[in-house]
Length: 226
Image 1 (cartoon, rainbow, N blue to C red):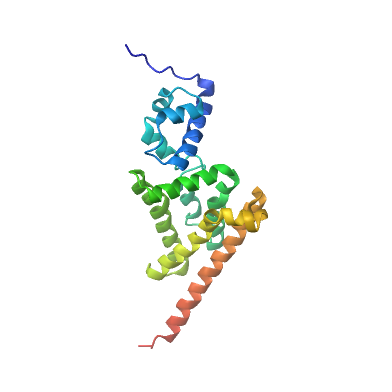
Image 2: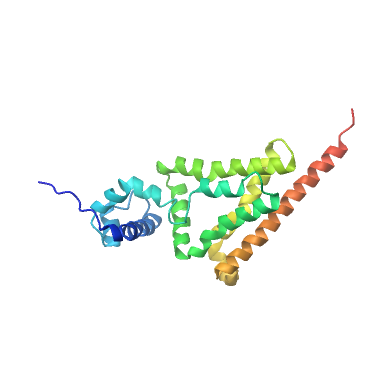
């Protein structure tokens, strides 16, 4: 005879779900999807194993949630903020950098998220294609459209190169966080420091766009007239 998993009290449901999520994030980041059992996750969260199916459906659903929820928001929601057509390029790049670097204020949680993403790259699961489409391809295409619009140019290889360069600026603090903490730890020590870095990166991104605009103008002036 089986019994249904009791539903948690309404008041502690959000807290219980978050506890499961963060316990799973730590284990998935350290061990990967295949080597992490639902029993181990439930034990780490000090919860009944049935809570995983109640809140997330199954282990795969919990794994998918670890890619979006701990860092506070979905990529499509953030993209909609900085790609709004009414923004100037300066405003758009500032919003982009602030939104992209905001999770750096979460401390150890963002380190676990980075390890999770790197592990997924090295040991791809069925989640990999979803992450590429949602977290990489979608925002990249939005950045390409934004840059092409403000450069009044058609989308070509150089627009894609510029888009990768701009987003690469934002990715750099995540990828090199351990080195930053050793060499110049104050650069990311406080929320204000993170905001300041985002402001500087927006200026650097504008400089990249200006350089590309200048290159295109120079090439156009060298073209023989009809």
